[in-house]
Length: 370
Image (tube, rainbow, N blue to C red; front, side, top):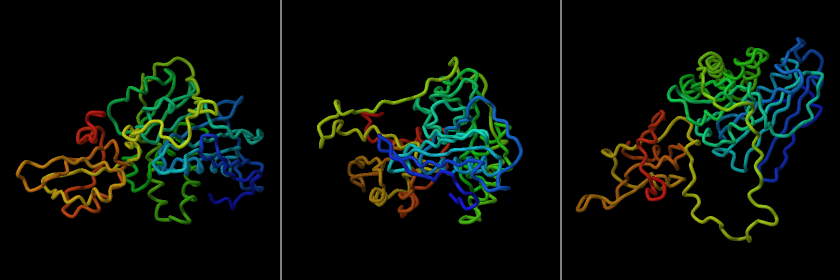
């Protein structure tokens, strides 16, 4: 983050959590900004008695951390608010779970809380696959706003766990981003900004453009288009939630403690990688096999980092002893290395639409996971 325009009272630090994850914490306040830099108008937050809190639920690589930075920077430097932003993620950020937190308050109220946002006013979900985890929805207030990235279609049954009185917004962030040659985070940032009158969309867009103007000036125009479409091209889903009142916060206990941890040097659950699901790692594109063109050379299998290609016996007396049957998309993270290596064009990259992976999937372990 470029911090040249201001002098921070508290520096950005990296802290280690007990579960091994890392969190980069940025505290900024309107009082730390030199005279004339922060906006002077009074910004009224929705609740005078507490901070306004946002939690971004994402997968590493989708840009939730950058979106949180842009939002907090705009709130402080351009809207005159106090703000804090930090993200939590594991050692392998890309493809793994990422949570980004934004906490906003009035200029006369310092923010001294660096704890994760457990009871957010707004939750933004960057990938619909994350809806399978109850922790994604946890803590949403009864009058909160829930925004998730998905194309139009059937409403996921998991959303019934949301508060009955919460606003539920669906935006096809990935589809818009691909059309505008941008990223889903720009679309979702626009969608979030458009839902709250106190968030000045113009100033947030200025901060977004400034973020990319230095290193990636070619992305500024496409990000602006994506941001503006996110603020207007969305669906309001009525009658989705069934829960009454605020949702309970998720405070998971450690899996192991000093009295219950197993003996070191052993694998307590051998073969557990079979149960992994990398579906959420794909960001809109997937490999699709045309068996008519395939010569079963195995080059794709050599470059696949996740061994998601399913092979089977060839026809008796046929040309090939082993044949590529398809892809088990449960383990495919969409790197498309197989497409790049295919000499015949049998593997091509296709836009992933709802249900396509389920229809084309060839299970690697049908006896365990059909």
